Every structure is written in structure tokens, then in C-alpha cells.
Image (cartoon, rainbow, N blue to C red; front, side, top):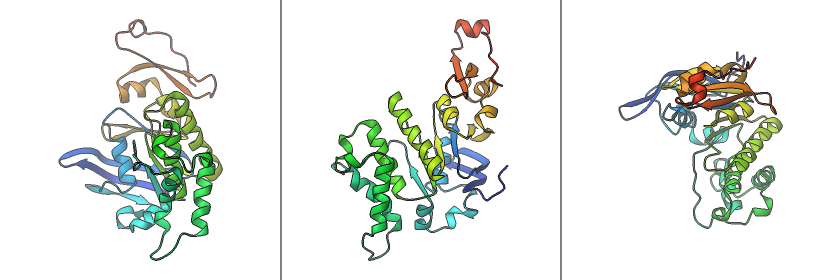
Length: 278
């Protein structure tokens, strides 16, 4: 149980688009200094919830609190100095270089008539260093590989110098090598700089490997939350994803590993053999 004010919290939160309700009466507290991963089936409300945490979507009712204060009542620049969001599939203007993209992360810290400062430059250089992009600083973003491009966008959010990072499916369209590369980077940033990270992931096994805290969303509500050991069970996968599976131990990371099977597979009909995850 959290004993300090969470960096982000929702209270009786209802979200939707026009008349369609997506999130209903959702209460959630994000643990500070940890990696929280939102999981769930397509259309369950994960990305919608992340948008509301970033103040990109106004609640129909209820509230989102940033450091204990209603995020809708806080100035835009104040919010941008406290949290950064990387949306799904961002696109940079044609010809924009990596360095120019990363510089944009400093805009929330600019003041009227204030020139670029030494601190701004140091934050940009640190972000490039953290993401191992110094050698590509003057390369056009659209010339990079998928993994490099994603690192560039993460560098921009790091230059924003916030304590909270929100990422919507940061591994989308990446091959397995680049997925691990990006997630290792985020885990390292969490460990070294104590960033509170909230992200949406589709891969349940990667969620178990990298998350301290998992939130399983089903039909617009929190179905279960807690550490991967507690949350990820065969029953939960069936209830949240409508998918039969076996949960075993990951032989490398000792985290829950989901082995799915199709409804018509021989294993599904025979019942298979269940390996204890305890």
C-alpha cells in the first residue's frame, strides 16, 4: 500500500468519446519510482487511460490527480515540467534532425524572451548520452532505423526532465531485438534516475519481465493490480484476454511466463500439464 502521495492517481474516473464510455469509475494509484505496465485486451481502455494521465483527454466525470492536485486545474507548463508522454507512433517533420527533435523537449522550460541556456544544452546532451545517440545527433530522424527512431523520441522526453514518463506501446512496430533494446533503456533509466514510468504493453511476458507493478484493465475497469507474481495467473489471462494458457517460470528472469494455446489446440482439449508458478 502506498504511504506517500502517488505521482498520479485517478478517482472515480470516467472517460469516453462522445456518448461511448470507455473507462468507468476507475480508481488507480501509480506507485512512485517504479515501472507500472498497463495490460489488457484491445479496446479495454489502456491508451485512453494513459491519455487522461497526460491531460490529453478530459474526464467526463471524476478526476486525475498529479502530485495530489487535480491535473485539469494545473497550468499547462507546470504539467509539462512534471510529466512527459510518448504517444503511439509519433511522426517527426521531414528533415528534422535528432538534435532538433530532442531540443523540443526543453520547450516547457522556456520563458518569455529567455534565450537557450546552458542548462538546456546540458539536458539535451545528457538525453543523447542516456540513449546512446550522440553519434547520430545530426542525422535526420526519418533516416534512422525503428529502434534508433524510438530512442530519439525517448531522448526528447528525457530532455523534458520530468520525474514521470508515460509511454503508449513504445515497442510497437519494432522487431524483438529493438523491443528489448528500448525496454532495457527504460529499465535502466528507472534504476539510475528513479523515473516513475507508466507504459502500455501488449506483450504480457515482457510486461512481467520489466514491470514492478502490473495493472490489468478489463472493460474499462481495473480487473487486478500488483506485482507480476501476484497478478499474472492462468485465471487472469483467461478472464482478461479470453485465452487459455499455462504459466511457468521464465528460466532467465524467474518471472511469470505465459504459454498460450488456441481454443481448438490439442493442448487445450487435453488440458496439458500445469507448472506451478509459486
